[in-house]
Image 1 (cartoon, rainbow, N blue to C red):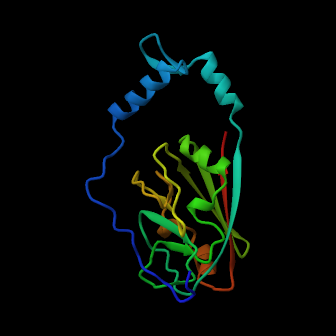
Image 2 (image 1 turned 135 degrees about the horizontal axis):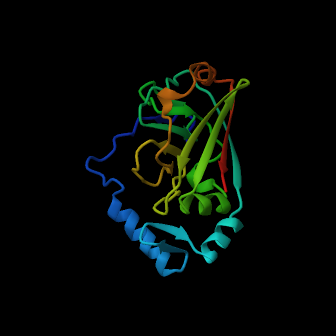
Length: 199
């Protein structure tokens, strides 16, 4: 990666991407039922079978840490995403970026973390810098690719590409604590991003 690489804003999402529909959920539940993981109880709701509960109880939490740094051009005003990048330089119009010079991108995550995210599990993302923390909750998806060599993107929408770490997040860049954002604007600030999968 060239040191003078300029990170351009690329958060132009295709229009008309499919939303999660009741039919999609029904299809997923029927697939689980076919595998003996859930059953349709009294014609009211799907509940886990003994086999399903056993699998749930065997699920172990996963945790991973990413180290990155601040940058004077960080503005953190994007309303639907936030991004962490390996790039060293960014422009102010890259308004989703909250950290640069990251030691990991999507493809660098551990197998355990990737597997957990692809199971559609909930992930708690903690951003810490200068003694200030903020937490974001999001979700994985079986459709995740996790192959991008430079970036990690967390989205409030359900849009997925190879840069997407998690979807349906409860915060975007513009909702991160403002006092934390001020820390992120300092190039000397070390930023710790912790990904934690909950059982």
